[in-house]
Every structure is written in C-alpha cells, then in structure tokens.
Amino acid sequence: MAINFENAFGIHEAALNLKAQRAEVLANNLANADTPNFKARDIDFKKALQMASSNQQVGLNRTHAKHFDSRIGTEIAGLSYRIPFQPDTGDGNSVEAQIEQTKFAENAMQYQASLTFLSGRIKGLMSAIRGE
Image 1 (cartoon, helix red, strand yellow):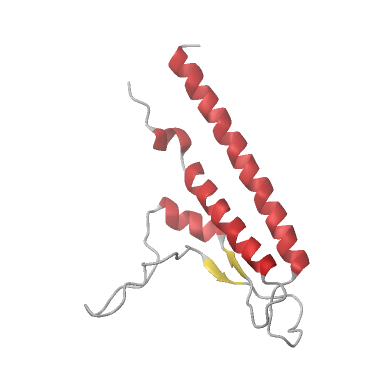
Image 2 (image 1 turned 180 degrees about the vertical axis):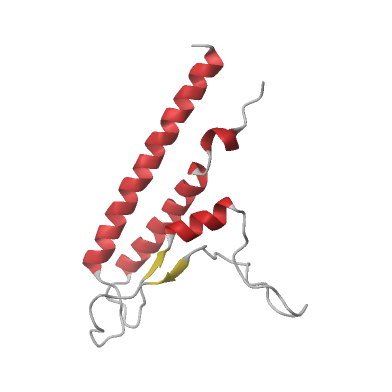
C-alpha cells in the first residue's frame, strides 16, 4: 500500500512554506526600519493558508491578451501593509521595531512547532513502514 504524503502531512507543508515567507517579510521590515517612506508589511496567515489549501491563484484575471499577468513574480498570498500603532514619525516609515521583533519571534516559535509536529509524523510513518 502506497503512502499518500498529502494525507499524512495535511496542510503542514503549506504552513511551513508560509511561515518561511513570513519570516522573510518580517526580516525585510526590520532591515528597513530606518528607510524613509518604507511601509511595513505582513502576511495574513489565516487567509494565506486558506488560499494555499484551496489551491487558489493569487492575482487578477486578465481582461485583454495584452495585459500583464499579475500572477508573475513573487506574489505572496495574504501579503498586505501593516497599520502602525504609533502615528507617523515624519519620515513616512511605518516600521515599529518592537512590533516586528515580537512578530518575528512568534513566527519562529510557530515554525519550530510545525517542524516538531512534522518530525513526529515522519517518525510515526517510519515506524509504520518498518512494521514497529
């Protein structure tokens, strides 16, 4: 009997990919904390995971053959600008370092939890394959 990895791992593969993408977005925010007019972004994880699990494409439909395909590039599902808690400091930058650091640490813990879960699933499958 063949093992169906989609059934064995569920949406955890997509969740790991989204957590990795979110880590990149949050790190980019932190790296640009002093860049004038930089706007902090974040991924709506629930929305992005829902889109990933339903295999929806991100982008707009083309209404004319000469229009650009909006799905080309590095579009991330659920990516949007973060609304800052503090008013604009005058340079147009919306990055709040403490918020970004907190979100980054939270995302890292969730990523590690997903890895731990998948590791347990893989060990369980290996035991089943060996007949243990």
